[in-house]
Length: 202
Length: 202
Image (cartoon, rainbow over all chains, first blue to last red):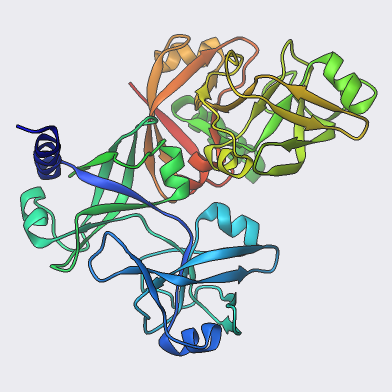
């Protein structure tokens, strides 16, 4: 068998047992209306992400908090119903924002911030959060791992600084590709490098 | 019993079962000679640290890497035989330095950087590292937990984002106070706040 085919097969077999780890850097989701204000037009897809339909936009924003600023922050598309600024706890210290740890979409009562695009700026009253670590799974993978939507599991990382993360939320959808989403605090805490795997522990 | 006495008792009992967690921010150790060059004099103790004899110095340095700089970085005393710059993997990305994960003192072959004090600057050829997570224990605590010097254990954190850190090094000395030392990647990954505890798992 050719090396490339062997590698593809090995990856497929590993994917039956483990879940690929991914580190999410700080990023922003905006509404279609906010995109118009920030950029003068809608979001422009630049690169597909691992989750089907999701993309990194060509547009970038500056995130401004009371104590600090991040420039050139990634914007992910498509546009959402509400703005969401996903940062790490480390980022929160830099910005001077006490961001709560939340599931994606659960922005109610979270702190706001200012977003600046190349065309305009937007003040959001809420939406700054640290994304709770979570696992995306399509139904067939979820069935094999024996987990249900919103189940909280442990995740063992096979990384240079191995760790078991407790309280990891499982999210199941036919639209998902299997992936563990960690923020950079978590990724660096376990010494993650791209290509690393994790194992669900029930 | 007064509230204060009760609290002291509670802490003492908890300390028989758990180990207090501490987060170490980026900091620098310098030699006596380097302190002379950087500050024009030896280190001035400003505040005692949890480990007996160790102190935060009044003096501060700027750490310069190929891609970034940290100003106002803590210097810990007393002076050592070799400079050591302890950063997180996140800090390493900012500085543009690929720092290895090492036990304290094991600086051989690690990258260097530039240190700038208020009086002068020093180029160090090696010493930049990410401190391997570790547990300081005095012998009596080590005996109770059933661990020996340099034993590698797991550590379960009782924190807002609970985790089990694997490959945690135990260091035993009569000069130590019981404390788990995490860097800020690890501390934030587990949602640490001061006063949190961890449990050694064998």
